[in-house]
Image 1 (cartoon, helix red, strand yellow):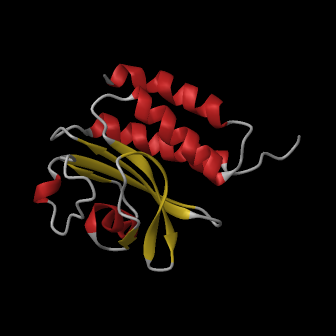
Image 2: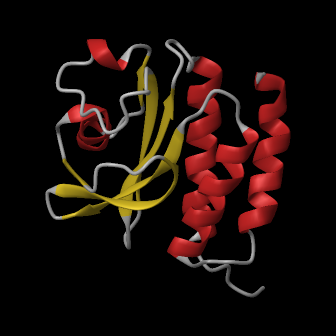
Amino acid sequence: MSEAYPLLLKQLDALLSGEHDLQANAANLSAFLYHNLEQVNWLGFYYQQGDELVLGPFHGQPACTRLTIGQGVCGTAFANRATEVVADVHQFAGHVACDAASESEIVVPFYTPKISGVLDVDSPVKNRFGQAEKDFFEAVAEIFVQSLQPQSAS
């Protein structure tokens, strides 16, 4: 399945290029990937507000609105400034179960001067995310962050 990732990255970059609005790009990114990836039951954003991560645009079942930084998969990834790949969320200490159908999860944190947060992706399948997905979603987050930066005219 990872052979599709380069094309998805190109399509995502084209989708977000020319638009710099946070919510518009987060919404389009969430919709695009949710509908183009297999075995994903939730995909979206949480943004930092103080010592919490607050729900942003997403696709999937209704989600937890606020998560504490440093707790759960999202809060841990954000606090540690590192992607978390969790093969079995039920084995992750302090996992916050927003959707009982989720079995595995990957969370990529991002930080900009204007907004910081995480890209969170859940799957109903254990061991859904590996190194290829880590590389892919880190590239996705980079495209997202870059899309928020207006390009200067040359």
